[in-house]
View 1: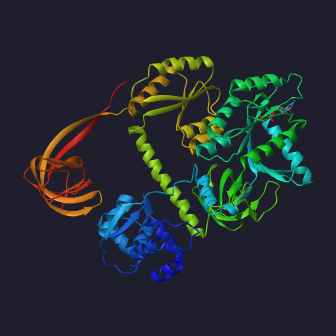
View 2: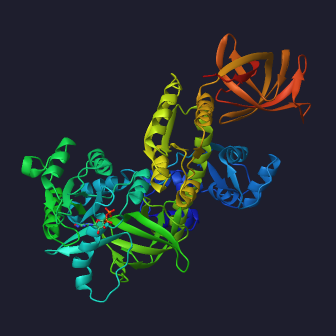
View 3: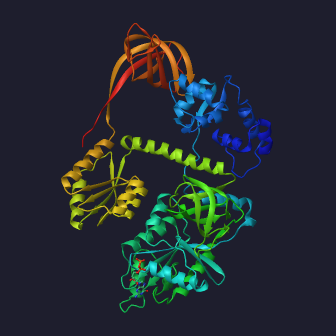
Length: 639
Ligand code: GDP
């Protein structure tokens, strides 16, 4: 059925209907104008209620997100906002129209109004790992003929000072500026060149920070990695890091042995060292192509580009310019004049000026697009990097951009991400102290000797419950890279006799990465010990308080009941836990949320008296059930 037909039948505007359907868990693809008849029937059933009726509906199934505003709740329920506010007040919650309420509160109000409530399964977290691949796979299955060859996306990586920036500049100068005399090139985080009528897109982000940020989001946009190794210096720690990364992400490598113009260049040594790390070059029977280059003189660079084109051909890279538009943020910043600016690498579909987009928690309309040559462009197809303005907020590198039919849909998608992130942050903070069994650490110290001392002390902290994972250890100031790595690994950065660079300090705040600095090893160890103890499962001591008999059930909601009874033995109090028994059978646990005696709230009720309670439980309590009331106290373990 057409959505517009449905909209007419329900007398709900199309946009609002899409919103309501999404909110109520009827997932529809943003571009779809038709929906399955079966679903249409369900939508009709769910939404055919007249918005202005104030009567209580019976047993209508709805699903609610973790957090929503009062206005959104009213929209989902199809009721007047005032009705919802009235119901909130009756439950003791004072909330205004735009205020956010949590699921529990919304669920109580909705069930008071006669709905059967369940929690929406969040599909609206940040699009991440594998999303683009999934869409491409699905489109390839349905519209293979729409697919065309796209430019390969190449990252130039390698150890510091081995010549990455010089190589990126040389390629750009010979291939871009040459053809665009007089034009000032824009550094937007990526650029595209053409050779033999074939395009290559280079990620122009020297240093690994941007990649670390993208990795933290699970994004991988790189088709080919060019590993730059200086011929006078050989394989170094970051060279090895790139080799490992290529292995993990299964990204093909091309080696560029650089600085061959230098008198102390030793190409054969580089090849040998690479072999020791499992990089087998073609010359030696392996699969990895290699070019000898001088990034500063330009020698060998054309051959390197040829190797890239060859590799791209082997990879047979394709995308669908007519498909769902998706891209990944390579870089972003906030401009004083333009607001949030982001460079997006389009990966599928075609991004057009004026389109509504959502990317991470940001949304907006594509106001302006420029390419790496500084040209204003109206559209951008697969593998094209473009700098975009028009966002509500600054997206993060690695965030995936998606287009929507209407600004409202984009806004809803972005705010869903924001909300689910807020809810998730809430969960992870509380989870860390209870369930987190891995303590991930990154150490930065003044001299290598300090690491030995720390490692020796860490040995003493080994225990069976909390695993200490040393993600990285190094010498020097704590920098951006450490923070991004910590974010990716959910680690704490520990500095000993070292400093935090001002930029890293800022980044640690925005990424909410914990950094601890120490000058005395004893304090460092003491703090770590405290943290480990905190993470250990504490011992729970149970104290029985009393027993009660249930006489009546007043209200049954999902996970919450209001029941009345009489205390048989001891006392009932709040807060307290209960075990629900039916005869000899244990039905399950519950938690007392509120206690009343003679319709007034109270802290405890003694044996022989009647009470009313609100109890959180999965058990459907019945009259005649017994409640065993108890308290639990927590005793910390020690190391
Ligand atoms: P990055 O840290 O990997 O980006 O390295 P840079 O591109 O900044 O290069 C580090 C230093 O090596 C600079 O002083 C460059 O001028 C120099 N360099 C880069 N490529 C070459 C080369 O091919 N030959 C020579 N002799 N020097 C080079």
